Amino acid sequence: MNEKELIESRNEKVEAMENIVNLAKAENRVITDEEKVNFENLEKEVASIDNTIAINERVNKMDNHSVS
Image 1 (cartoon, rainbow, N blue to C red):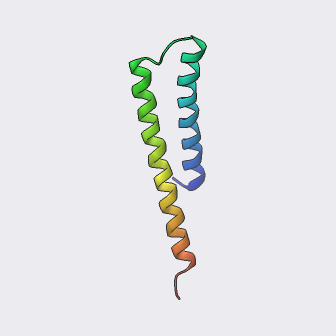
Image 2: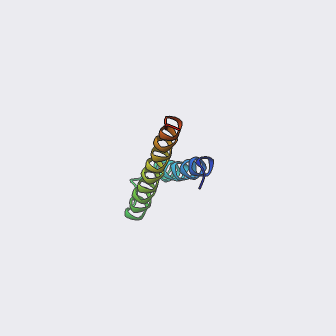
Image 3: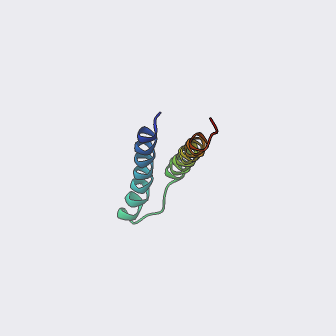
């Protein structure tokens, strides 16, 4: 995935996390066990994408400073 695709995927996952929370709020209830698992899985995926983006940025920074 390129950076744009990573960011789009990240944004979709964050939106899904927000939807889980907002649905429970709208229904005036606590998050179910299933929703909690889904939220936590999405959270892990977001963290993984964030790490990938950070690594790509570090590599790009190294490429810009490499000696020819």
